[in-house]
Length: 151
Ligand code: DAT
Ligand code: MG
Image (cartoon, rainbow, N blue to C red):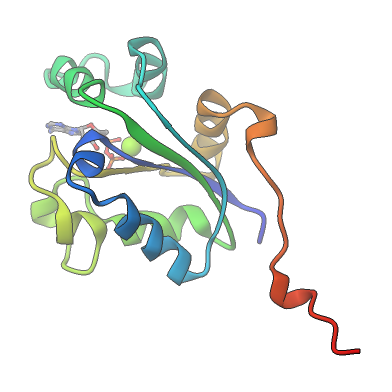
């Protein structure tokens, strides 16, 4: 499905370390299409929904502190197999396990400071996009290189 979508976020450590541009550039270069983008201070309420599967984990309170420690840049990316491809471009949750060339392998400091979020399934992505974005905040656009007239 060339219209597959995923939710990618640059977490507070990524914003604070000025890595937003580098992260965006990787997905642009891979050929994916940016269809939603905003910067915001995350509320504990939205985070509790986003990370509901982790609420019982011992690291959860630290995760909330980290994710609310500063603004995040949150994006919707579109393209063929975008969920699986961006997951492999992001690398393992723990940067120690993430190979060089992945976002976390190149920039991640620690499992609790791993720079980015990426949805892990197509179904999960749909739920996350609904949680973080209003319908009208996601924009359809076509490339100008498809529309040049030679007449
Ligand atoms: P991912 O972000 O790779 O999808 P996840 O969904 O299992 O990983 O966990 C979400 C985030 O929670 C992860 O990016 C960082 C944090 N986290 C996960 N496991 C952790 C651990 N063992 N210690 C500290 N933070 C952890
Ligand atoms: Mg996850």
